[in-house]
Length: 99
Image (tube, rainbow, N blue to C red):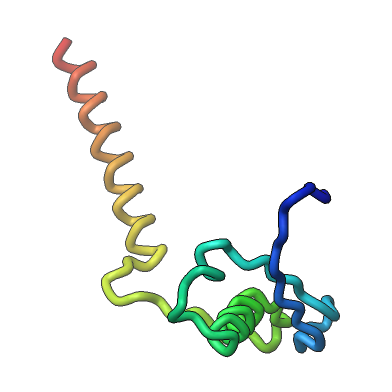
């Protein structure tokens, strides 16, 4: 979209290292342009970081996810589920027998 009186600054990154995209375009925020502490090097570094974080990695190259400490394994959760179902069934049978 082209707007009259509006000027946008962009960073164009060519050769992104991606197997899918040749170029990436980043539109800078107005606040980034007004900020004296942000250099061109910082902007290019941030664009490179965003590209690196959003790269599509082949399944064979992805690291194997490790289980977090304190995270219960599936069989433990399944045991608790079965125990809850059996307990609820026993409570229902007891109610029916006493009524």
